[in-house]
Amino acid sequence: MTWTVAPDRFGSPDSTALRRDYYDEVASRYWGRPATAQEIDEGLADDGVERLVPPTGEFVVGRFDGKPAACAGLLLIDADVAELTRVFVRPQFRGTGGGGLLLTAVESAARAFDVRRIRLDTRNDLVEARGLYAKHGYSEVPAFHRNPYAEHWFAKEL
Image (cartoon, rainbow, N blue to C red):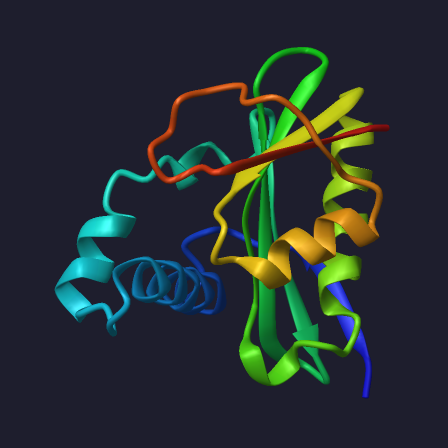
């Protein structure tokens, strides 16, 4: 049982399915009920994912034994700072090391862009995500924007 993590086009079938699963989970947790297909479609429409390609970012997909299992994005904010986004591991693959491998891949991409700092935001209910970030050296920092869905902000110096 092995993980591989590599860049993938955000519109590939695997990436699209992972992004849908990601949005389904974060929206369902937020609303306290399952998200509908229409709500998922609306949430993904014009979400800026097209910027997660060089030279403005990167999108990676993690596969566990060849099966699409996880994804993460990196978005360049300026010459020194990038934002980590859309970090998701399908529930059946959690606890197998994929989250850490996603972060390693995104951090490598950031270094290739000469980024010095990665930042991110998350919510109270995304407990697993907050634990993952803390475990991998991300520290809580003051808010760097006013997104109504953000409740915790993290950063890591590279």
